[in-house]
Length: 266
Image (cartoon, rainbow, N blue to C red; front, side, top):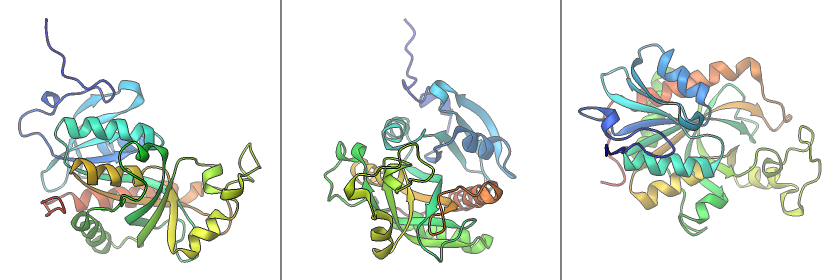
């Protein structure tokens, strides 16, 4: 019988990564963002598609500077991300940058900019299966600084701070006008203003669990997100700036991965 070492969810194995396999990955929630980075981005060479299993598009690519990386899809939310990250680590990935989208909750963080997460307030059920609530969800210091340097060198409008990572897009981020459910649980009423006063910059749905997994599993992780919604003024995504902001976030992630950096796990 021929042995199949492909991972059940991501659909590829360590052997599929070839000789001199990569240790770095860019991880996007949206498969179309993953595909854009792997197949359309200037300076990125597609080596080969790896899988489309379960809609989790993944590609082996070469980035400017010559390094090979994996571009992978996590799907929406922390439960899906936790599965994908576990299997990526199993095939040899040891450095992951999430490239996502986010809504700002601070006046000075405007749509079209990017947020680099240094730590997350993690309000996510999936993370409770990995570490206790008080376990820190902290980004790798060296990788985070590489993201900051990349943003500076590229002239991208960037912000560094704390992210609120929650499980739901509507109720958990206090959306009522654009939600089918206008009624919030009492503990979520006013949560945006509460987080704003805690100097949290933004809402998103994955990085808290990613950062806790990094600490427990022993890999390096960072997060850069395109701001596509000013939650200080409303609930609507700004589609006019979305594509440009996503490309800026991807540019920053790719540049940060161009060279080896020390990691907090060394």
